Length: 92
Image (cartoon, rainbow, N blue to C red; front, side, top):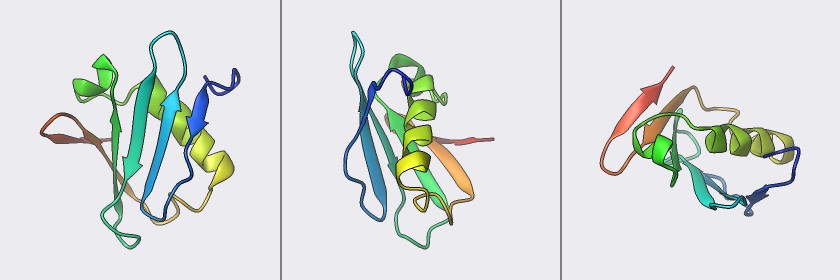
């Protein structure tokens, strides 16, 4: 997705970064923390794999683009949680 330019990163804030993966089926990816000081970032994607609580390829692609364009976004984050419909699971 990254090498094909299919990740459209919206302008991130201090606590959230959102992207759209432009393929035959478009997906919305979000990385969000409750505050700048929070060590936890929640990741979500609208794809079926992420809805099952798995870290999907769309999240990976978005993470790579965020690191390239906004390297400070994850600087104080030490924990990643996958957000599903009503629950969160911790990614290791």
